[in-house]
Amino acid sequence: AASLGQVHVATKGDKTFAVKVQRQFLRELFDVDLGQLRRLAGFADAVDLTSEGGLMDKNTQRSWVSVYSEMKRLLYEEIDYMKEIENCNRFRTNFDKPKFSHIRAPNTYPEYTSDKVLTMEYCPGIKITDLEHIREAGLD
Image (cartoon, rainbow, N blue to C red; front, side):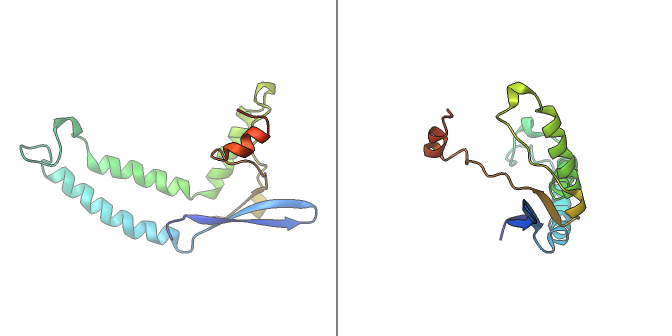
C-alpha cells in the first residue's frame, strides 16, 4: 500500500465529514526510509558523480544532503494534519472573493483532528478527469 492514508465519509448529527486517516506506522516508515536515503545522499556528496564516465554531467552538481534535507522536510509536512488545516484555511481566505465563487475549500474541524486523523467538511465534486460530468455541469 503506497497511500499515505484513506479518506472516509462520516456523519454526526446533520453534518457530513470527510475523515482522512493516516496509514498506520507511516512516520516510522518514513524514519527508516529516510535514514537510508540520508546515507545515500552522504555517499553521493562524497564521490564525484560528474567525473568522466560518471553518472551525471557538470550541470547536475548539487549538495545531495541538501536535496535530502528539503525532501525530508516536505515529506513530514505532507503528513502534518494540523499544517494541512492551516493551509486549507489560508486557501479559503485567499479565494474568498466574488471572482472565485466557483472555488471552494472545505471547512476544517480541529476539534476532531489529531496527528493521525484529519476531519473536514465533505464537499462532493467532479474529478478533473471526468470530462462528461464537467460538460453536464456546464463547465469547460
